[in-house]
Length: 130
Image 1 (cartoon, rainbow, N blue to C red):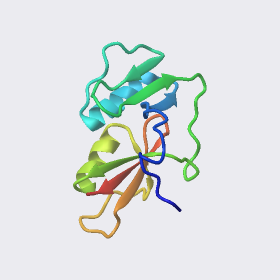
Image 2: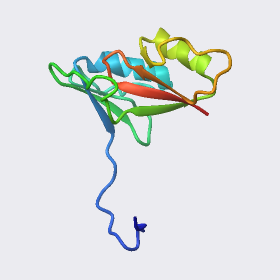
Image 3: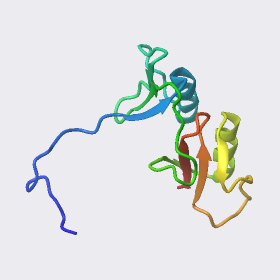
């Protein structure tokens, strides 16, 4: 595969926010706000909510009847880097995430570098060990 550089290829545009379709944008935004420590955009409403941090943002759009693809089909998904699985697992499950792979809590020591969860609306995300 050839490498494409900015000089050889014009810039088409910029990356827009990552948008998750869901039935309850405020609730799902609250989950990710607590998980990532980011404030909610005060201009959100029942149809659209986003996190207010600068940079690549995470947004939530109301779609009646939205159902994410079932695991393990669900792709793409979000990857979050954590310092240790025990505290990461405890935090995400306390906030309402469901463990998918593996489903048991992490051991004190292990050789896994990734754990997979579903957020309260069913979107898949992974915790990766830093």
